[in-house]
Length: 287
Image 1 (cartoon, one colour):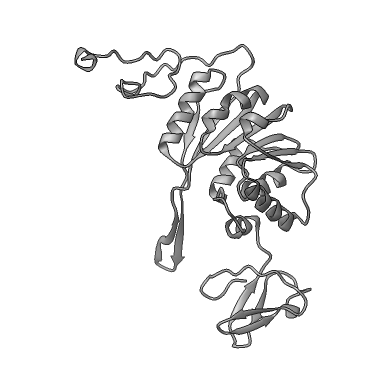
Image 2: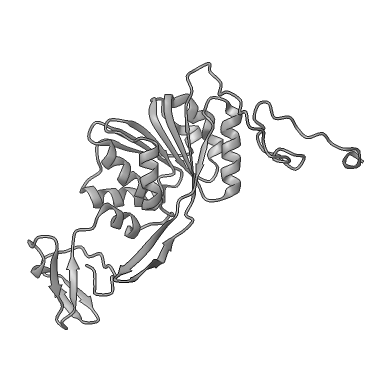
């Protein structure tokens, strides 16, 4: 339900129930059986728009213990990893299940989603959210507990999405399961995670040069001559990284563009891609 100020309230209707507001209650019985898009009137005369929540609304408002991938990022993940009906998808870091909802819808009844989660309490929240949205746990979904690098299943996958603290620890395991041409997406929160994951992929050699993205979204206000950016802005939520798996025995061509001076200097301690030499140690440093 949405009030006159645009505030949204998620309500699960049940016979005999009431939705209480500062302007009086609204009987659930008055809404059950009605079409979407009606205007409900509270006892105190306040109007509320009534619609079933969209997937976007559910992902933002769902119960959670772990942070979720928000719709603006989930939309780009589904598009840029090319999730298609019937695909086999590996998801690691199921969290509260927000991305799982979107993936299951896109995969359809012929697809398969393997979701890995290290913490049992997070997995249980995800299961409850999926059951709440779909009415049951889809038969195309399998939740596996444990560290991905240790418990990864034997099946090949077409797409892999890693939402975890250290995705670089799982690159080798995922590479063994991802089919040639398959797409890998890594979702991380910080720039240091972004850099280390990108260099791990380059060092591995079996993936294309990773594409690194960050997306923001901004609302707009438009009434008559008053056209301006809105006050609500969805800024940084995470970094997205996309790459594709090469065929066995093939190594990604070396980049023609040289790294920036100092990119892999003496202070750099991360994975070093092929062809990138360590910076020489000057005498003063040796002393």
